[in-house]
Length: 209
Image (cartoon, rainbow, N blue to C red; front, top):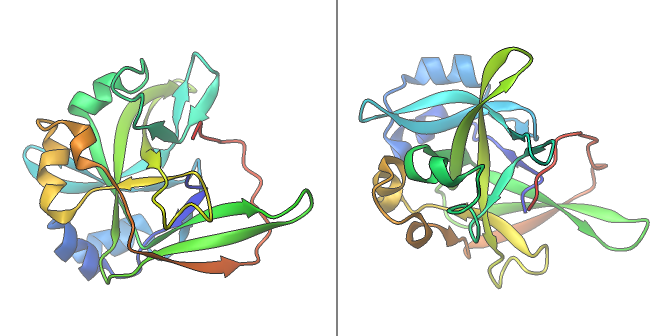
């Protein structure tokens, strides 16, 4: 799935790869780069606004009033028909910049390891995402979820699912909502693993996979 992910440290790389309108200084000041992002955190996502690509700070997780929990992921198999996601698939897609992501792999009843998944290339991941505004505590909260896909062969030693990614040449097609979304989302195969030893974070926000 995607238990957490890391924001890139280089604002210049975000600007150049995603061709966004935000200035580098604004990105460094507003978005707190080079950190691990957990469900419930606020993090930058790329949206299309007045036909321009801009970064916005949104919360990772969308409240689902039917299940009474936060959904941090949207499964590609059902997002076009899901009451929570079907409108967002048509008009509220986003990209989530990431330099890596993390999965907890269970080794036994008493032992887990944290695995960091990195791209083999120098490019950042561009996770496919959906953003939804929802009501919480009398406020309207902009939230996002990561689209997940079945794991590639390279990913299966770690888990059964992974974040869907969008290729650079498909950024515009994904963001403008005109193209069929399923054809644009792919399983990243060019990945490498690094084992971490940190204890798993305790967090009330969980996704449905």
